[in-house]
Structures are given as structure tokens and as C-alpha cells.
Image (cartoon, rainbow, N blue to C red; front, side, top):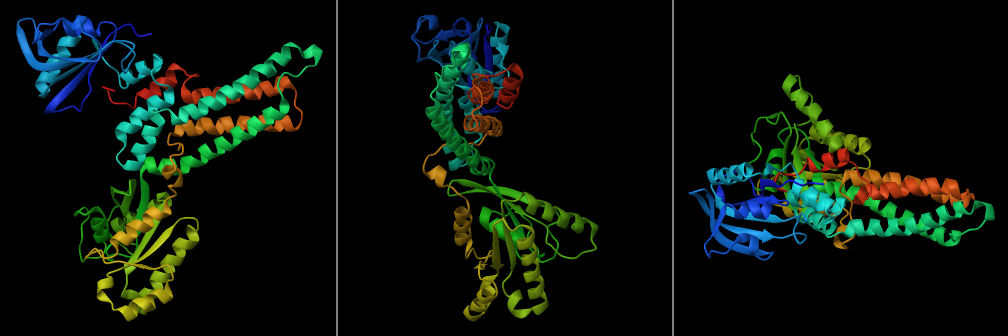
Length: 464
């Protein structure tokens, strides 16, 4: 499909110790060889695959840099084509000089994700594995890395492929029955077919349900920190992040907008959102911040309601206000985990702590200023997330395209199941089976189109 040779920087742009420039295509080795002088005097075109050679990249009589050139001959390369990787010094000038030289010698700049696209088209990866490459590059915590690695090794696609093959076998038998319609014969054992459909239904439901976990692991679990002004929300955010990220002030209403940052707890990414304090105010800017607070609660997976622990003991009006706000959040978001957190516990004694716990049974205490209770809070957050499937190394769906295809396949399988139960004719069963097979094929890439591939690989970095 692709007859030209492409080139791109495979490492991040900018200066560094080294940079890697990648070429792929029919003329990759020839193009590199014509502009490379080996220290050993060996000819690059005559070298074995998976070998590395020290020498200089030259442009006529001009030496650009001393480099290491790695040779990968088709089909034993990432793309399935001839591939050259030039490891040069990380000067931006040197990078551009080598890339411009390769372009003048007949290469063209690679499009985003084109190396991985060629790997897919040459059968080195299926489509879900190719998409996992992008997820692996963007993974920033242990859990998202683990999921991407499992998918890139083919765990998800092999599970789908196996179901698709079994369904395809039965589909072939039912299609065969249609050719012998006048003889009224059945080649597909309906009892065995029902068992297969039940198994497919079970697997699809498990994969679809896993998306709820996979999506938050991939994107980070959003946690909204809410409460009245000046109770220590910004101090808590700083304590969790272990840095001065948010402004801390004695003046109520300091946080006028939401502040977000992410940390990894037990390998899971949590995105903490410090919101404007909730209170009655005539300040227009602060009112906008409070409105945004409720928007962030809507978007959050978990809510932390923070208040001053001594307020429930020493101020009856404030105590009433706090309990009312907690009740509002619980009533409005009954399904959303709410952590009620009493801050500034260092200002009260043991007896007062016991009084607090009588008022709020699920109360947790913390001192954001000293760090007391922060570890207990992080453990609580981690326990709220269902990571059982991750710990058991089960397949977890994180890609919304896969999720959509699974939902559509599940819908068609339900139609097939209903058809079997009601004795639907083979020709009508075959229509629903074909649609289910189509959606299975969309996931792994047996069924694809140029627009779909364009959308997927446009999100990749240029050198991958």
C-alpha cells in the first residue's frame, strides 16, 4: 500500500543527550547507506538485520555527526518494512540537519502514527494492539501502564478473536443451511449454538462492565475537594501533592477558580480538584467559582467534604450549616462516594474527637497542615476504586471506540439469542450474526476504513 520511505524524529523534540531518527520503507537502508560512513569500513546494505554500526552521517564532503545506525530488515521490524534508526547527538540543529538530508534524498516526513499504521497494515499488530501503543506512551501511572501492556500483548484482541472465530464457524453452517433450504436440514447444532451465545453474552457483559474501571484508571479518578471557605482545602491539596500548588491564605474566598493536579496512589492516578468555598456571597467572581464547584461535583468520581473539626464543637450555627451541606451533597449524589473529613484536628482534644464521631459516624480526621491522617485518606481513596480485575490481570477495556463496538455487538448477540429462543428462521438469524461479526471485526481491524484509521492514528505522535 505504501511504496515510499518515511522519516521522523522518534524521540521528543528539543535538545537532549541523544536523539533517534527513524526511517521506514523500501529505500530506508539504501538512503541511509548512501549518507553513512562506517568506522569499520563495512557497507551498511550488506549488514545483517538487528545490527548496530558506528560511523558518521555525511552530506557529500560535510560530516554532520558521529552516530550509531541500527538496521532492521523486513519482515523482522516494527513496521514489517526495512527500518533504520539513527542515534545521533541530541542537538536540535543536528536532528534537523539529518532529517533535512533524508528528505532531500527521497524520503518524506511521516504522518502522525504512520510507523504504527504501517505495522498494522503489514500484519505486525492488530488494530487494538496498535491503539495500545498510544496508551502505553501516554500512561503516567502503574495501572494505566499495566492495562496498556496487557492490551499490546494481545490479551484483549485474542479474547475477541476467539469469540469471533467460534461465531464465524456457526455463521458458516447457518449460511450453508440456506443453500439447502428446500431439503430442510440443519447443519448448525442449535443446542451448542445457544451455549456459545450464552458464553459470548457473559464475556461481552464482563468487558463492557470493565470500561467503568478502565476509563477512570486511564484518565485518572477525579476527586472534588469541597467545603466552606478557609477550612484548609488548598492546604489539603498541597499536602496530598507534597508541594505548594494552591494559594493558602487566612482570607476567606481566596480560591476563586478550581485548581487541578494529579498524583498516583497505589499505581492509580487521582486527579484532585480544589474548588471555591461554598458559602452565601455577593462577590460576583466568587459566585462564579461556587457555581463551578457544583459543576465539578457533578464530574467527580469521589467527593471529599472538608470542614474545621473544632467548628462542630465550638460554633453551633456553623455546626448546623456543615451538617446541612453534608446532607445536601448526600441527597443530591446518593451513589457518589462521599468522604467527610474534619480538618485541623491538632486544635482539639481526645474528648472532643469522640464527640465529633457521635455526630458523624463516617467521620475521618486530618491535619492538612501537619500531615496527620493524609496516609489514611489516600488508603481510603484507593479502597473506593474496584481494582480487583486489575489485580487478577483480567482484560479491562479503556478505549471508548472498543466500548462502543462491544455495546453494538452485545445488542446484536441479544437479537441472536432471542431468535434462537423463538425459533427464528436461519436467514434472519444470519443477518444478526453478520452484524455481530462486523462489530467484533471493528475492534481488531478485520473490518476497517480509511476514515477510521485516520482518526485513530491522528492522535499518535509523529515518530511513532
